[in-house]
Structure formats: structure tokens, C-alpha cells
Length: 240
Image (cartoon, one colour):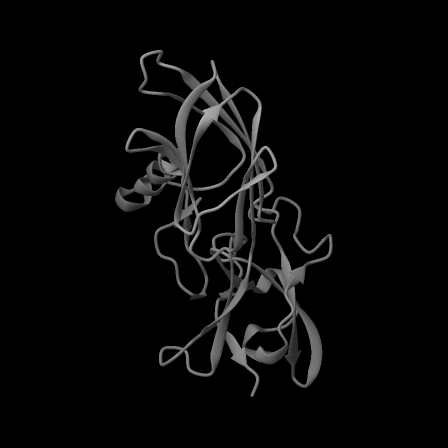
């Protein structure tokens, strides 16, 4: 099921039938691998980090093929391990995108730190089968202010993901939840926070106040919120 209309507050309308714009969304999802990896100026490039295998051919005389095997739990954490397997040792450049939101971003090759301040890190060397690339970064939590559209309210962004309150996962009404901006501690929700059959594994909890009492508020990535047709709320009241 996909949503063509994505309200920040309310109920997401999911569709599973074929219709004009709605049918374009699965086509876009199918194209994601073309954006995750590819080539920039003939160099293999990593633009997004996810587990899987990326294979490509170099544009050298030998037409060397290279297999990159990525292992990671991202977006749970910022630890990415990539094994480089060229068909034969070859000198070429590999590009790694530094996400704009990432903090403490480092890249190591065979445990040797590579230095770069660029948003697109280029590593050129003679690559051998079994070379190990370690990409490391921390995933910060950012408070988004509702400004004039949602005055007195905030949202939480974890890395690239905006989080949302899903009524199906919480006992309280989102309209009664207040978040103290000065003491936000986002942690992983305990096991069982997500119901059986839930599409996704990420669930977080944050301290909130409901009618004067402290409560644990469950939040999930906005993309996964509302899948059981529960009311969602991206914005929550800011406690003064």
C-alpha cells in the first residue's frame, strides 16, 4: 500500500489499486537502487547506505568488474562495513557521500583512517579482493520548530527520518502530549512496542507529559506511521 496524499496530521489514505499518480509511486520505489549506487564521472559511488551487493564494471582496458558487499543495520546505527572484491587488483577511485545530517563521519580502509572534508569523499588506491571499508557516523536527534504553521509545537528528526506519533501505538491522545525541549532523551522503545505484522522495525520512546503526569511516548519514522490507519501526529506541543 502506498500514500499519494501524506498529511502531517490525521489519517494517511493508503491505496493498493492502480490509478494514475498512485501507480507512479511503486515505479519510483523500484528505481531506488539506481539512486543508491552508481557512477559519477566513471567512478563507482555510494550515495545511500543499505545492506546489499553492488556490482559494476570499470572503464579500464581490462574491463575489471568489482563487487561491493555492504553490511549495515542503518538507520538503526551509523556503522557501515563494505567489502571490496575486484575481479583482479586494480587502481580506481570510489566515491562515498557524507550525509548532510551525519555527525562524526569517518571512513577507514583496512583500518586506516582516510582524511577528507568534502561532502563526497573520494578514495583512490589499488584495490584488492577483500579490502575492507568502514564508514562510521553518529545519528543526531534534531528538534524541528513548528514556526507560524504549527505555533508552539515541535517535531523530532533522527538523522534523515522525521518521527511521528501513531495513535495505534500509544494509549494517550496526541493533543494532550507535551514535550519538554530542554530534556529530550530519545531511546529505543522496549520490545513489544510494535504490533505483529507491523511493516518496519524502528520504534523509539521519549519522555512526555500528559495532563501533568510523566508518560513514555512511542514514536516511529513518519514513512511507517499510520499503516494501521491510526491517527498520526508529526507535531506535538512544546512544554513551556
